Image (tube, rainbow, N blue to C red; front, side, top):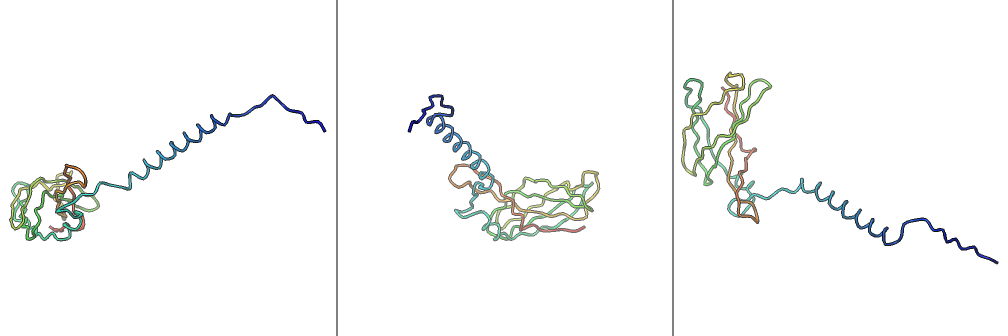
Length: 159
């Protein structure tokens, strides 16, 4: 029996094939990392615990006490033991809404009156507003702070 050996080989050498496979694994791992990074956010802490726990302990009241030339005066009373860093106010009229951040703080046990322009984009007064408190927390593992809005603790005022 006679075997014919073909010396005319075509294909990729094992070294090149291995390099391509390793390169493909790195690219796939990078894509998965970038995709998953969107699900993993930095954890914001307040008093060494997740800030969501501090949000649940907030106790505050909001009352509209006046309106001077289209500018509403709100009084915020912080009845809890956590300082409120600022507020996000959502004005609603019909199907339209407008959210704005108002940078005034209310320390624990204090009250503050603040003049706020709550008008809609067209200049009309809103039908209702929702006031969301925001806390300043530290980012776990870093020396920086981040504002966290407590969306579940909003208070609605209807006009």
